Amino acid sequence: MEGHETEGKVSITITGNALRFQGLKPTQRYAATFTLPAGTDPQQLHATIQDGPGPKDIGQVVFAIFKIENGTLTLAGISESAVQSPRPSGQDPGFENNSMFRYDLRKVPPKKKVPQ
Image 1: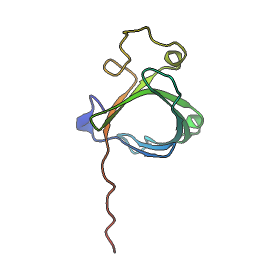
Image 2: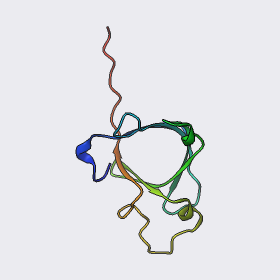
Image 3: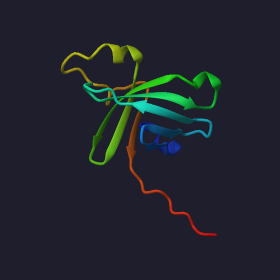
């Protein structure tokens, strides 16, 4: 997580239209389904939480913009109002100056299980 690299790693596992998020703390564990609305610039991801640390999390929608460059997936949180109001041409899309969250993720091969 940008600005918190020394605190540990964040992981997101994506399978189809489902994702599992593990934050820096053990309690920051979420499962969600997501959609990628067509025609957005930058591309958006809308994740609906299916499982999380508390009942109030279930059903909440997290909005993010994303890009994939040089093998890195960058996710940056945006507000619901930003989803409803497209940004003016030339305005920073939020990757560099985002105050909600920003994750720069690289794909890593799954760990091989050692036979017992």
